[in-house]
Length: 276
Image (tube, rainbow, N blue to C red; front, top):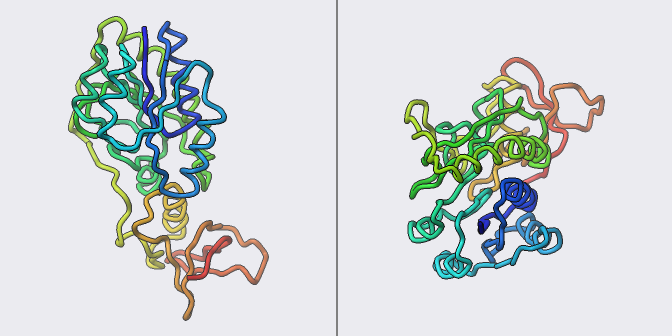
């Protein structure tokens, strides 16, 4: 039983390989986009080269147009996807006879799309979810195989979320893959409560002091895991100076040089900023 993996995230690749092997599926190749958008993506690619599990061919794919040919060449029974930047085209989804299984970091149908963690923080979700589902031709709308959640981490970088997602993947993936092997195609998603998680827009770029301090802190955390930077944010303006805010504290750091923003219900300290 052979599988190909579609991912750009080293830790996700390890989780997918471990889960697949636990149910008798052997991953044979990782197909990941060749292009890198920024320094963080370049770092992940180097990690894929250095740290990918043994037994995998590593294919750096020039364009989505190459995916069908490369996928077909490995004759997979199953596809495994997590943290992928391309929507897989129908001709690729049709190749593995058991379909393609995706791990999406939200409780679908909530937060479909590319930036579910950022939107979960933005909207004040109490939990970080994961859904394992079979893929169809749209973003994150396929039938559900397994779901679970953990309390939302309080960190300000994607590194704070990785251990939680690892834990959820280890818990959910083996059972979900077992269902697929048994011919179970999962439960169709409801449209009740469905939402989409696109890049943030200009409406969320500025720290608005009419909001509460908790909302401002949440806005900064949400931007910390928003990897699309077509809009710059979050921005705070103090006097004649504007800052790109990387971290906020709701407790006085005791340093008078730290900029302070007066929110609707009290102060928030901008402990890590870049002047614009």
